[in-house]
Each structure stands twice: as C-alpha cells, then as structure tokens.
Length: 358
Image 1 (tube, rainbow, N blue to C red):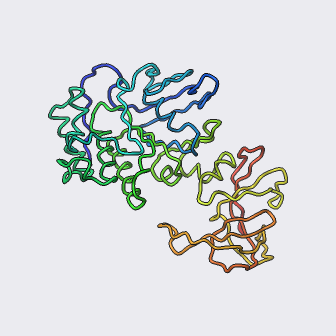
Image 2: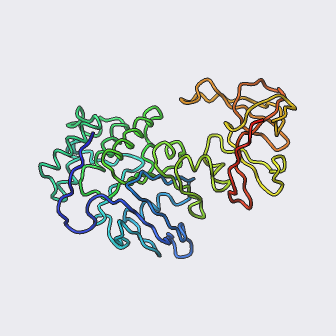
Image 3: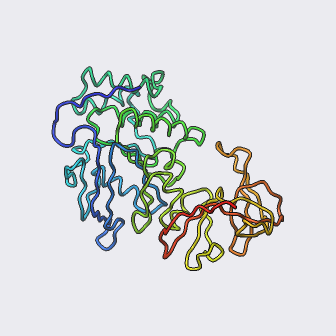
C-alpha cells in the first residue's frame, strides 16, 4: 500500500489534494455564436473517482479542459475546496492529466520522465524520491525504469503516464481523458484496476472522461451522464443502471440498453415502461404471470466474464423487439414475465416498481 506523503510548503496556487470540486453555472463555446456547455453545474466531493460518461459531442473533454485551466469559461465559476480557481492557469491549479495517447519525452528514460516535473518545480528532495520509488514499485515499472519510451508497449507507456500524474505530492486532482483508448482490449481491465487502486491508496480526486459505460461503471464512485443539453443524471453506478432518470439514460447505459414500451399492459396507460433484460423471466404462453407474449427472433451469445455460458434472446412482440436473458430456440413462442420495471411520465422517472410474485 502506498504511503500518504505530506504536501511541501506552498509556493502559490492550489497546493495539495482537493476534496471538493465545484462547477457553478458554467457556459463555454468555441465561438461567440454557439455554446458547447450551457449553464452546467456539478459538484464532486470526498476525494471521489468520478466519471463523465457521454457520447461524442457532449462536451466531456471540454469540461476536463475547463477543470485543468486550459480553457476559461465565458460564464460561471470553478471552485477547488471553496477557492475560486476560474482565472488560475493550469500550472497554478496543480492539476495533472492523462490523455488518450501516451505523452512522454522520447529522449528521456522512464525515470527521467517521472522526475522531470519534480525538477522543473524544484521539488526533488528525499521525500519526493521516496514517493517516486514507491509508485514505480506499485506499478511494476522497476524493470523498465532506465529504458526509453520507444521500447515500451502502449500499456507500459500509459502506466508511466499514470505514474507521472501522481508523483507530485502537491497534485490537486488527476484528470483522465479516455486513458484506455490506445490500450489493447486484453489489458484495459488491468489498467482500470491500477487506476482504481492508485485513487484509493493515494485518496486523490480523479475525474475520468469516457464514452465507454463499462469503464465508467467499473471505475467510478459516481457517474455523470452527459448529453448535448447538459448533465442528464449524476449518481452511483448502481443508481444510474437501476433507476435511470430519463429513457435516454436507460437506453444509453446497459448492453443492450433498457427495453421500452407503452405502459398500458402494466396498468399505466399514460406512462412509458422500461426494464432490463435480467428483470424479465421467460415463461409459457398464457402463463398467469406473463405480461407479454412473443416469438424468439435470434439469440446472441455474450461470453462476458460475469455471464459466461449465457446469452441474450431477442423476442419479437407487438411492442417491438425486446432483449431478455435465456437459452431458447429460434421461432419458439413464449411469455415474458417482468419482475421489475421503471415508469416514466413526460420523459422523467416516476418510480421503480417491483412486481409481486404470485
């Protein structure tokens, strides 16, 4: 486990870990005529791992650059632990950032890359060297410490970038801009685990931008789902998945997304009903507990770690094609019994309903 090192004396700007990040009524546009972000507010507390999840074009990277100080909002304030940093530069905010692709000095060794920022800020003392050595050991970089980046694979390079982001004791928060993009699929899980462990052991606030829901839900303590209109929902991964505030969030989060249909078969003629595939049980046609009937169209093998040997069955019903779990043959007629559903009115969540078993 990594030790927590004390921050060195202040040299101006933000010093040491930030527990609370606030963005208040932020507006930003790359041109005067249009806004990428309009009246956005977000609070991140308690040294969280927080994910900004959204499709391309929703302003995720722009938000990160506003937090880092690379961009300045046209309106609104950014606060670190109650201190207004809106006008401070990236250097003064002491924020570090990990990008989609590794950014390293190719002429320097791994060790020299890690020590560069410390030397540049005159922070290279015994305590800083001890911290570097401990992080190098924690990330299994000892064997490549004297190698240059050109001999490393993409996974190792991104590990070095993660190490660079946390070597300084004065780091206020760590920003991660889709850091797994360049990593092979087989190594993504490993790097995500490394990031989670570093965040917990160093108790650093980390803000993670991604379009990949698996990355967001497995890494973060809390997730904000972004749309072109702003933040659709902020909550724990479980809250986002089980009680999405809008049909958009229900459809966007989940693989596949939530099933939706008119609510009259469930006794809510003015509502839209949504349910996850795992909330539906397959039964015989005409069964007492079956709210729906349909015919199996196709079966899709999942083969994921937590659902090995299971698959999704796509069932054609009068409400469209629904995804449920279960091993069935194509063309088979069946009933569908839904044990839980979410109910929406006017595109907003009204309630989560657990259906009594009979």
